[in-house]
Length: 200
Ligand SMILES: Nc1nc2c(c(=O)[nH]1)N[C@H]1C(S)=C(S)[C@@H](COP(=O)(O)O)O[C@H]1N2
Ligand SMILES: [Mo]
Image (cartoon, rainbow, N blue to C red; front, side, top):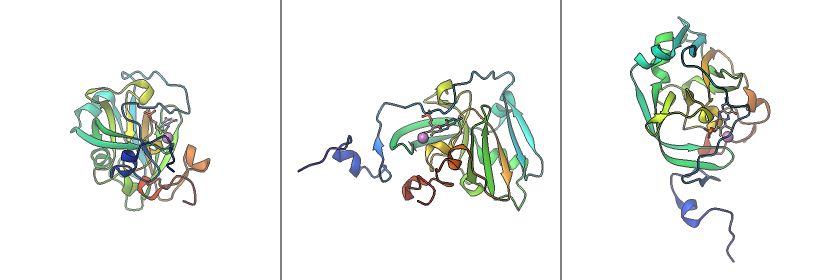
């Protein structure tokens, strides 16, 4: 007897799929806790502060003057969909943190959104060309419902770490939980280790 669970045999054997995930195909679900804000790029800012040598705020124009960087690959939502062959363009978090200069005691990051959304990450998970602030997807401006004008992208972790409408990164010497983490989601969220909830 075969059991159908809403995904195909081929999906389950796709080596790009972390455990417990299915391929959402062309569909890109929108998952937002808050209503989609309409942010004006004329007044939009992105700030790196906390345990840094030189806290810095970029305007929309400033950010576009930084060396560009892109990500091509998959994204994985904790609600079990994964989406392949995504192309995002923006600036690498390494480039932004280089400018601000993390202090040696900085080990954790709180990502913040213009809407008040927060999510925590170990500093090492946003360094080493693993995280970006992105404003383009598939060669087009990032749609507002997907976090435009710009969102954080940390594709090697579950997608709730990729804060939409990102407003900045706050560096800390200790871990503090963000919005979903306080409600039971995992502090790190590695999809390959199925770190969905606290204790996983
Ligand atoms: N500001 C903000 N960022 C957020 C969220 C949110 O509710 N608010 N949801 C997270 C979750 S749970 C997921 S799966 C992705 C969804 O991104 P998408 O709507 O572009 O698919 O955004 C993440 N970033
Ligand atoms: Mo999610």
